[in-house]
Image (cartoon, helix red, strand yellow):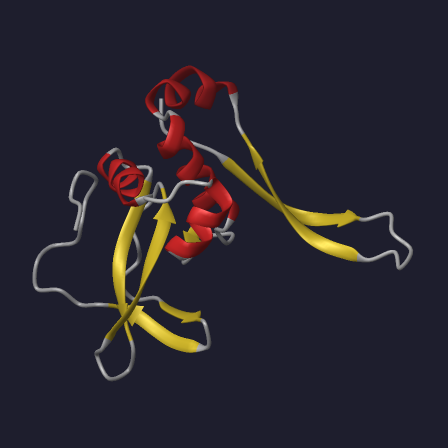
Length: 143
């Protein structure tokens, strides 16, 4: 049974004086998640995984920073949890570079490898996957 979580995007009407609509992100956990993944992810790792998922786009990409993850999960050190998620194939991570080949940020993806030919607009910068002479990362490879 494969790893899965459903991320749903939609509009939710807030009942306020101004009747404001906002895009909301929802996670749906299937019985498959409960039966397999819930046993594998506990505590900090589960909390960090949910945070990455809630910040992901419709392709599973996320570039949420450590400061935000720490604020939203309440954990001061999330590095070990992130490494655990990468090792178990819940999260993929690659470095991103700018047009001058300077490493600038990280990109993460839920459950799937990161496409090397993609360009991302992150915090106002156009970034692409840092080309590394070694083969692409697979679950279990942490850097």
